[in-house]
Amino acid sequence: MSTVIDTVEVRDVRAEDAAELAELLNAIIAQGGTTALEVPFTPERLADSYLTGPAVLCCFVALNPASQEILGFQTLGRYPDLPDDVGDIGTFARIGNTQSGVGSALFRATRERALALGLTAINATIRADNAGGLAFYSRQGFRDHSVAKAVPLSDGTPVDRISKRYSLMTGRNG
Ligand SMILES: CC(C)(COP(=O)(O)OP(=O)(O)OC[C@H]1O[C@@H](n2cnc3c(N)ncnc32)[C@H](O)[C@@H]1OP(=O)(O)O)[C@@H](O)C(=O)NCCC(=O)NCCS
Image (tube, rainbow, N blue to C red; front, side):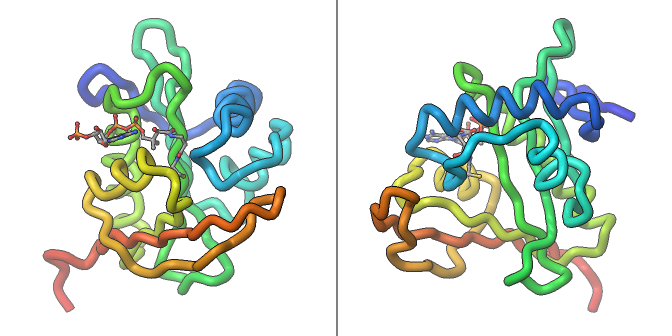
C-alpha cells in the first residue's frame, strides 16, 4: 500500500528498489561530508543492511508521484548497542532534492510504523559536522541524547557523533 503525502508518495521499500537506492546513496557517500557511511554499497549489501535484511524493522521510499523516480529513503533497524525497543534511523534524500519535504514525509510513515511495532524511541546518530542532518532530526522532534567523542573517519580524522532520540511514549498509557 502507498500513500500520497503532500506532493510525495511514500511506500514500503521493495526488493527491486535496491539498485536505484544504491545509486542514490552512493552519490551521497561520494559527495562526502554528511553521512557517516564511507564505503559504496552494492545493491545486495544495501538490501541486507538497510532495506530488507534481518535487522531491518521498516524501510520506506519517497517517490515523485508522476515519474515514480525515488527521491529518498528512510530505514529503521535494530542496532546491537541499543535496547530492543529502540530503533536506529537513517535518512537519505536524493542529491538535488533536499529540503523539499522528502525526509519529513518519510518520517511521518516511519513514526507510525515504529508506534505500531511497539517501539518506545527512535535513535539517530549523526556526524557533528553534518549541520543539515542535525537540523533535520531536530525539526522532526529529536532531542540530544549523547555524544561519542572523536570517532575517526577511515582517513583517521576524528569527528564527534551525536545521538539524538525521538520519544514515542508521549500520550501512551503506562
Ligand atoms: C538530512 C536529510 C535526510 C534531510 O532530508 P530533506 O528531505 O532535505 O528534509 P526536509 O525537506 O523534509 O526538511 C525538514 C526540515 O529540516 C530542515 N533541514 C533539512 N535539511 C537541512 C539543512 N541542510 N540545513 C538546515 N535545515 C535543514 C528543513 O529546512 C525543514 O525545516 P522546515 O520543516 O522548517 O521546513 C537530507 O539532507 C540528506 O539526505 N542528507 C544527506 C544524508 C544525511 O546526512 N542523512 C542524515 C544522517 S543519516
